[in-house]
Every structure is written in C-alpha cells, then in structure tokens.
Figure 1 (cartoon, rainbow, N blue to C red):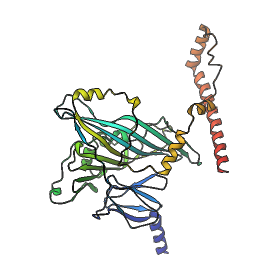
Figure 2 (figure 1 turned 90 degrees about the vertical axis):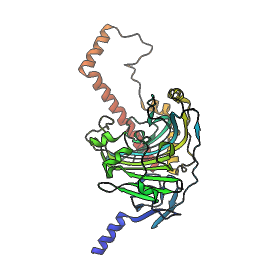
Figure 3 (figure 1 turned 90 degrees about the horizontal axis):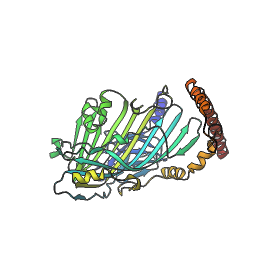
Figure 4 (figure 1 turned 30 degrees about the vertical axis):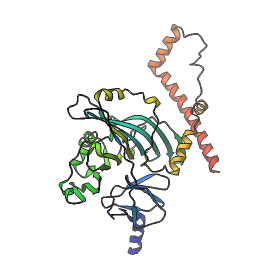
Length: 413
C-alpha cells in the first residue's frame, strides 16, 4: 500500500525533466515551459529541472531554438540559435545617449477562485539611456511605441469570451526595464560558470560561452537581487505585494552592460498587485497574477541629446509592431486567439447589447427648462439617478449574460 501511494504521489508531481545545452551539456536554468495551448506553465529551476506531467510541452530559452516534446523524456537538449544581432549606429560625435528599440512578447494571467483572464500582448518599445552626468533624464523603463493586446476571459462555468480591451491592468511587463551595468564575478576570469548564493538559494548563475554571457537571477533568493529590478525595489522593501516567484534571465554579448544586452526575459508570480496600482472588481476576493515576457533588442544607436529629445516627442500613432527574427513562431493557440479578437465587430456588438434610454437622451428635443434641471439635481443628490442607472445596468448585464450562455450551449450541442 505504501509503495502504491508513493507511486501515485510521484505521478501526480510529474516526471523530473532537465533542460541542457545540446553542445556543452550544461544545464539551463530559467527555461520557459509552455503547454499545448501556448499557456506558460513554469521555468526550470537552478539545476535546469522541472516537473513535466502534461504533454506535449514546448521549451523556450532566449538564444536557443525552441523545442517541442510530445512524450515524457528525462532530458531536453536545446541548440543555440543563429542570433541576428543589431548593428550599432553612432550618430553623435560624442556618445551621449544610447537609444534602444525592442520587441516585447508577453503572456500574463489574472485568476481568482472563479474567473481567469489570459493576456497575450505584443509591443514595440524603446529606451533612452544617457551617459552619467548628461543633463537629460531619458528613461530605462520601456516606453510603449505601439502595442496589440488579446484577452481571453473564462469563468467557472466554462464560458469564455475574447476582446482587445480590458479596464483592469495587471501586467508586470512595463516595470521591467534596462538594468544598470553589472560587475562580472571574478571567477569568470578562469571559469565558464559561477554561482552566487543568496540567503535562501542561488541568487545569480553566470554562464560564459565564447562571446556570449547569460545571467539567471532569482530576485527572491537575497535582497541583493533588487539591484536587477530597481523600479520594483520599493514594493519589495515595503512588502506591498506577495511575490511567490521572481526570476530573470539576461542574454549579453561579452559584457553585462546595456550596450551588450541582446535580450532578457522574466517570470513573475504574485498574489495581488500594489494597492495604489491595481484594484480588482471584488476587493474581498484574492487574485493571483502570473507574467512571463521576452524582450528582444532590435536596434541600438548613440545619438545626441537634441536628437533624443526630438525622438521623445515622436508621433506614436503611425508606428507598427516589428517582430524580432530571434523570436520563435507564435503557437496555434495564440494565433487562434488573435484571429478571434481581430474578427470582432466592436460597433455591432456594442449596439446589440446597449439599449438607448430615450427618456434621458433626445437629441432633437428642446433643452430642459429650469424646473427639469432642478429636479435632475435633486435626484442626483438623493441617489435616485444612480439607483435607476444601476438597476438598468444590472438588467442589461443579466440579459447579455443569459444570451451568451444560450449561445455557448448551442455551440456545445
């Protein structure tokens, strides 16, 4: 009986799988694992291992070719990809401001005990990093030049809907910017790897291979990890958010500087968001946020302060998303979500679900007189208008929800 229970426990946890470099056989910590639907599951631990219990699985690691496994295996070997590095352009006689553009691919999930919101987002962003002492602030957080968002909403009854809009903001991606220059561990002068241990577990794992440098950071392993996320260190010091996982991966060329950065990724799991940043629709119900994103540098150049200020006022309405050649192809599930969202007739859907109240809106009628205005003000002060509006909104929402349930039931039949 004990052996049977032990076997069941092992199967429930899943088989231990290790992700390694196909050439060097070095383990790859921080590899991202996705399920068959393109949903982010987890990252490999400091030993490159994770528990796999749902196949097929897709493994992604910046700087390596994506790989999909359809059946249980002990080891997954990833091959380095032929990375297309952006050329460096120098327009200024004095290298004053480093301007970088990047492609961002993000997967985030907001979940409660009853509802789930999945977000896939693509963005084109830029960074403006002045040299020390330059009288120009610039920005190290990603400035969004253009973006496309795709949401899928699912509730406990299995009903789902999609949209490109959502009023609640729960992504961590806009807080993950370019980190300052870091110091190389002295051990890397004589070795290809080095591990810096934190208070609870390995905090930084450095791996050097020819002209490539990879750094995996577990921010929660030690307080020193906050230097990699300076824009979020305040939340971590004041415990504004319960972070359950906070891992970063940086892909550099030779030196750990912004100039040598080719791309980075991060994986964050948190219970809630900072109170001054986000509030969900049911404040008494806990919610959980999972974010995984990959950032690929597209272009980098040195420019003058004058040119930097000029680009800071660029018209963002005419820009298009440029995908990095180093990013893997989108999964069928994500492509299906994008197709569903792009097929939405927003004007038609809005007119079909909203009933115009002609008692309060009559564009061709005469303007209200003083008595009507006074009565309107009294109703507002007593809360009568708000009560009627809430009752009307609840009625319309109930009708819309019932209609959606009937439609989903017809599709299932």
